[in-house]
Image (spheres, each protein chain N blue to C red):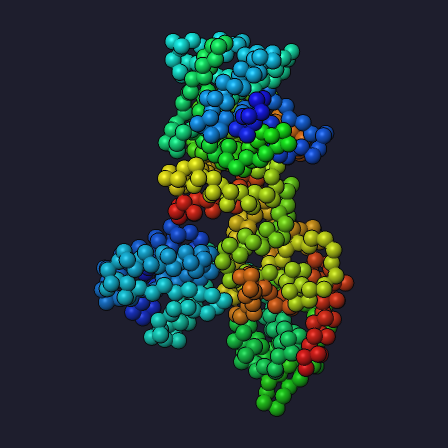
Length: 283
Length: 345
């Protein structure tokens, strides 16, 4: 990675979770194919994106072009049809990095920003709640940052106030899984791995949501737990979430579906309810 | 189905329309009750109303905020006739001064009925043991001798029950010329009998963690404090250490909670609010992360600590140590209490 932009890279997803929870234990591993990197703040995202892609392609990284992932675009390609930056390292297709960025403001929804490179045009996707995921990240010894578990959890909760019908492209343990269940399952896995640390999540969430959404935070906060509550109330959705956990971050933990549900109930009581109350929700 | 009076409230006592809502946990329920009574006050301009909230599970702060809102929302002539009454540790707070003692007895009975409706009725127990605990408490605390009336008031049992208990304790009782009484010494034989029936007398319920990640007792205590409940106190090892910090015990003991149930009913739903990972476990000898005991006397003798938690008296703590099979610690604690008593004589 270009040294001058290391400070602007926040790794999110299972690799960031693995860094946080497993870094002291060489017997534990994270199995992942995509390394999601947020470029933040937004004002440097284009410069950073161009420099990173230039550098990596220059040393032999290759764009992921198979399947649904298209070739780089041209000046005529509309922004929303540009391929995201997904680069394989030299000599392997076992994993790739993907670049993302944060919104310009609290009102910006999902969008694409054009990266113009000599090798073609790419899109830098921006999702509304990535600003939360990238909030107050942890600096690694390598100079770049990893997202905090509690921030990834909050971003996922905000992303899924309801469990939609969209399913994941790949199967989990041979099953088709709803995206909402996979992402909310990730929330449960992060909470489970955090054990008693979740006692401190409420204050961190409160600070983050007020910082990232200074005018909208109350409305977001009062609905932050809606999707998780729906998950906990549905045996079927909970089963899907459980499968993603035991084939992912909780693969090394002996945990049952009922125990994972208790983790969710505790999260609601200890973190979500205080956040809702701080936002003015009174039930 | 709840039976209402012709005025659509739980009861009419004197000129008051009375609605009792035990263990209100949410602002929504509180608002419902306030609005319900306000409607009736508008309909009956000659009446006043009491909203009685025994075992309120909201904090004082939230209650005050809601009260302020109600003051602004309703007409003054409604507010002037509206009384929000709390019941804490058997005492009424904000009961109108003109409420007569016979009206108060009717209110006592109404609360009892409504609380039972909202909770699990406890089995009848021998009042002797409630009175014995009071006498042991007085003795350990080196308090002055007491009258039979005092015992009746504090225990909630009738004078005949107190008299019967004192007859049973005859050899261990010292009677003063002014008819006050006290224990001559620590009643070891009667204490041993109490220990044998302690599970029934205190309606002990045990809970174990089923989450695979037990919450430490400190986290449960923090959540208990957040509930603002004054009718639940900490006993057991944690409570005993408040009186005797040097209590010799390594490791993290279970948490013992004492619930004040002078009305003969208990609602253990609060355990789920402390931790949804706790499940009931049957059997006295089974390992547990939490044990909940009931204290039946009218006065709980709970003390509020600087930490805003309520703490059980040393007698309950001592019983908890025995219940947890911590016999050496129970003996050590008792010896310390007796030593402390002797020093303060």
